[in-house]
Length: 432
Image (cartoon, rainbow, N blue to C red; front, side):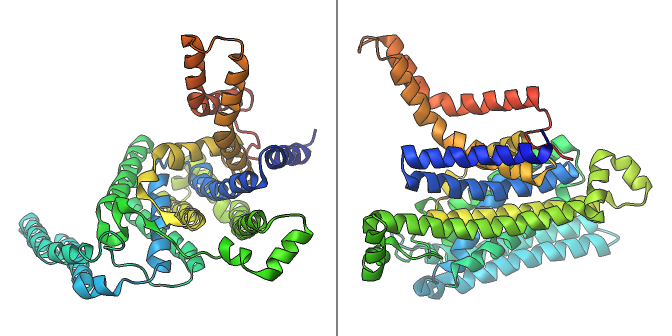
């Protein structure tokens, strides 16, 4: 069997699984799985750029995805006028003071020959106290404005689709700052550093209510597709739904989900095409040469650290775009839901199973693993009910088996990963 035919069959298998879900359960469930699978595929492409192209072990994917979600709020939500009047300018002034303090400390460190350490320490201490003196009262004033409904500055009120590239830019900026300090570390230390920084990002989003309401969550984000209730109240849409044999409620939900599917497919195909062009370009060959042997690449005159920074920023930007897309799909930003299991390690499983170094493999792994992540638990519960049908209702063994269905997700991910590593160590679609 040729590789092209095998790859086509693998994608066809995933498509069949989604279609079977639509037939056996509901098309709403199938489309929801597909949409989240498409977003996960974009995240997997971002990780594949870093690991598959350059061998960078980034375990902070969650942080860049969260920054993309934050961008959706900062761009699309309307500004809260009362909060800006109460303390918005003070918050901006405090942030400017903080940035200026860091710049002055860097300039002092570089330009002073004598007493450099004392001068830098003095700049940082004075800047810190000045920052807190301006920042704390301004934040208290902002968060005191109707905290049950707002209590934050809001966003720019721009179209939500603009938040997707902005999410990529925000994640890229954070990745540049991280990369300038962490990419000189050994791979295992880089993993620890990126994981820790991701947790810091999530902690800031949870605790700084003025930014995006923290754990109170921001709900009601603008959407790039119509609202279901508007479609249901449209006589023309109701008539077209009836012609297809659907009630307006079901037709509206399917229409909205298909709208998201179309948008996500366009973004995925564009990023996939760009990643493929990069892979086949001299830059892509250079990145793989650096990945395989950094010493030899340096001997040939390549700036390894600079190239690592480039691909780290690019991969993080792709993850930021995916994070903004996912928040747009959810219609809300919930910082408490960003967990390493879902937004870092599951993405790594997708890349490993699909085939690191192969962009199509990353997409396949994302679609397949996300389908299993969603469907394994209900399937496991069904199987446990079948297996325990003959047991007495008060049986401790029956209760234990039924309760264990909740752990089927993690068990299945482990089994799938072990099987792939055993029988196809380079993934389902290996790097060519």
